[in-house]
Length: 451
Ligand code: PLP
Image 1 (tube, rainbow, N blue to C red):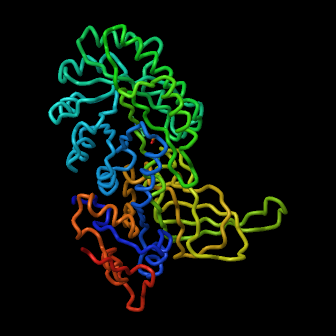
Image 2: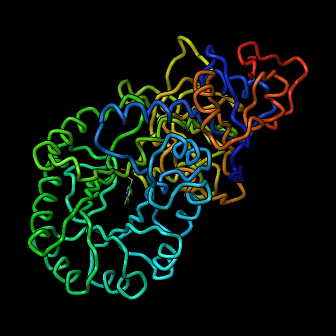
Image 3: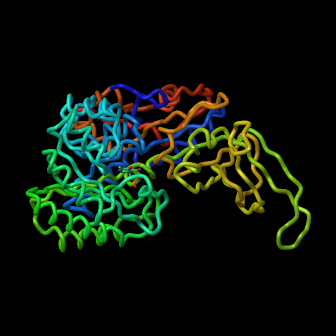
């Protein structure tokens, strides 16, 4: 298996008494771990796939690689049988290198460099999106046999990241013109796609978009096309406490009303849904500044605490700037009955922009304490940079026994990649932690007898 530089090359198999927080606690308690680190629970990804399959019996997920291109994530999803949405030549290669068949990939970028289109032709990735005339001419010149999917615009009224200002043609005016041009050029258009916006906050938008797609299927038929692909794009939430049930009910009902014909192939491009909650980030407080202030209610003198941690907006928390995420830092250590103080959390670089949380209430914390950030799997690591010399956090991948038993036969990993029968010492060693001789890890060691 090829391993991402920031990723541990092992899957640590945990017994069922362990969870992500207990793993973080064990690592932090070594006293020798200082750098920020992630724990990725692949069981969470497997569970998301189960939820998807039961919520959307008709919709085949094509995971949006851009969201988190970790090899572990891609391998798990490939093993579970999802398709993939790739935006570039490099993403296509990454997925193909796993042994995924090219017909499980949609090249879902409506504005592609010509060399990338040529590459798609060379490797047999035939299905790709477009939303403008020039793209059709480019495809005509380098990949005339491509199966094109027209991307229309239909924006959710509320979304974490709107995409419609950049992609998607107007379905009523531009789309029919583009289909007529495609027909003149002899290009095969096979269906319609849309993306309502990432982190969609208006589930009803999916019904509007599906209804618009139906109109275009019907119009295309008048031109002699026989569309057979509907791509529902992304927009599905994935953080802890979120649910796709409401969106699924709306989509399933709209599919029944507008696309009852089971021969129409329905796909979607979820990214955030699959990975957001699988990644938990642990950051260490290395500096603290107390600033004299006044209590907002009583006006009595008080202190605002500024906590400086070792990951920030140039690293994982780029998601605050680019993905409009709101993150919550939870102390790893319990401070029962402690007074809560006005606090802010800052990244490690010298830039004033490097603020992670502007205002929150926390007990008084200390240098060396850890802050834990859940739901950090989407649009974090692929964008992170080591600006100012602060390293991108390493990822430790864990799975519980049940998940390991499920995956061990279908993942393209060798048995060596699973750390089984792990002892505290070997776990610490594989995680590159200098372990104190006294350190014991009562809950982690498990023994699975291999057949
Ligand atoms: N498909 C395309 C074309 C996208 O641009 C994106 C995100 O930007 C996605 C899918 C993933 O959507 P989401 O972030 O809602 O999971």
